[in-house]
Image (cartoon, rainbow, N blue to C red):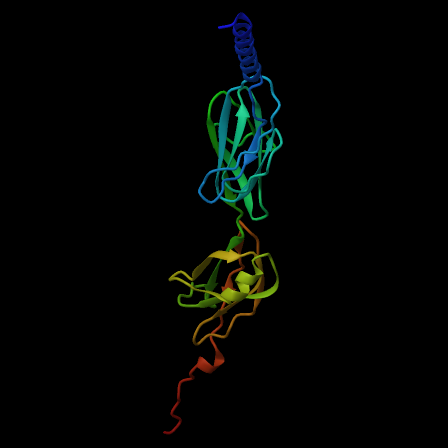
Length: 251
């Protein structure tokens, strides 16, 4: 081979080697982003290109028990359903959980445990693949109503029908109240009754039993998570049920 051609081939080989080394040094790294899973459970990864060194990347998977929202820092998409983030090794990720109007955040499990800080946040250092679950509980929207029905001699009356009817302003459960209609209970042998799950709101309470006059209606306000003790109701024997003895006045 001609010396000049051999020299040209050598230069080409050296140039190709330098170019490969240059490209290798400009390896890509990903900026952290949260991604929402698509229909098959996989995510669409959002990446930024421009780093000059290779970094180890680790996934952080967030799942939910109940309904709520999780925000994350470094900034990304807020999650209201299972989601996943990809982060360079050593990144400290802050997750902050908040409930919806009908739910309350109750704690973390997995890579974070317990309630987190006062804001509901947990802090995760990404040194490996990690997962965390945020638990949310439904807010109580019901209360209890209890009381007793007795006769004029203060003896408990069994078999009395006690009714709660919506009568005033109600909570957000008003639609449920309208659909459910009146709530009824029947007193036991000692005259006691208990409504164990009544949507918060204002009601009229009445008591009725055959041969007794109906009770005077009482207004009862039910508060979520509380038990309302109603004043004891005393039923009087109905006049129409009183039978006078027949006296034979004939000699």
